[in-house]
Image 1 (tube, rainbow, N blue to C red):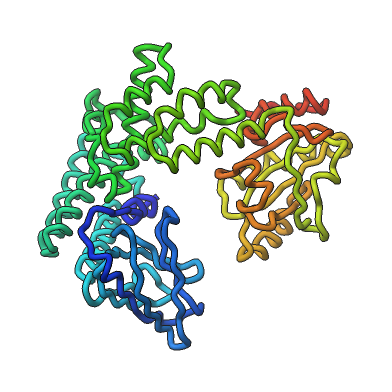
Image 2 (tube, rainbow, N blue to C red):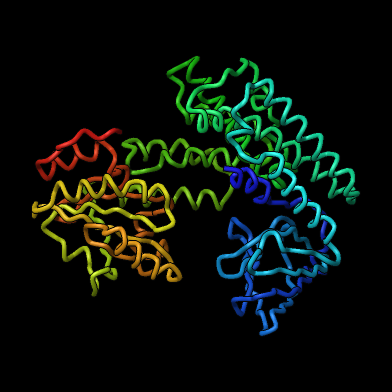
Length: 466
């Protein structure tokens, strides 16, 4: 949980600082105990990625131009840490691959701000400590605590003596860190204490009154992005409480029309995209209402893709075929299962919610053992680097059903057909290969057992919580 708080401080996207693109970024460094012949520089939203060769002494050097200044990640194999980059920087790094985040040191143009951001992240992590202790206190004590923490962070900032534009950014990061902690109080309290805290009626007023047109904050702080989405959720729930007839699309239209900064407005409209889904019987009419709200061409393309996917994933349509490696050897294709109902579970070894579902999936498989009307197929989307982990996981956990691994993960044709972006994902098809449900039938859901009983027959056997 402490790690979760710290990560919020690291994933920051900055795009407002002045920079000279003609200069580009000069980046060099040395990795002690290097374990690869390259390092990768990338943005968390995947809008930028660059591989830099590392020689046998662990040294690397590159000059490149970036479109937006901001927080980027440097990665070698699975180890990574973050750094702030902008055109004009001439930055030298030293890293030990055995302690990637903590060992990173900076020299040259850009070192001062990067060193400050690293120190700020550590101080904030130290101040939070154990989240159970930090959040599970009476609300008045919590407010005093986060105010005191902000005071210490501002003091650290003053002592850092940053350049004016860097200091302005740093102050905003501290402000939105404070507001996000305030906003998350109830969530973390309930998670740790398993009971509701007392919260004054006006406690969330700073969220209700959050400036929705702060372009600087949007482009600088992921904390701010979490906050304005939570503001949307909060006000939408309050609006429905006052008027149960208001639709989420109508509310979002009114909400978005108050936003003048297009990227923020676009992000809010994206909250409606889950309406364009085959599980929503009104997805085509909802699409017609949502599309006019979009003003960004890239986002229009995304919702068009969602519409096409929803149409292809409708109940009654044919499911795309696949032909994947079987854990027991050879390849298994969907066509080979024709004539049976097929329940598909899409998962990965790194997916906690997927693994949490396995006990219930195992019960389903055992309950239908001997029933030749249905097959259970589990498809892993693990990457090639995790191939052996997948093989060992299936063996060690003695997972039942037909265990397959997608050849290209999420980029395989089958996953693209389903537009898989979140897992676990569950699909049920009939003996002719037609879709009964393209998502939503998790093993732990009572609806899943009811649906299987309806189509396949027997057994419900046990009551499963929704």
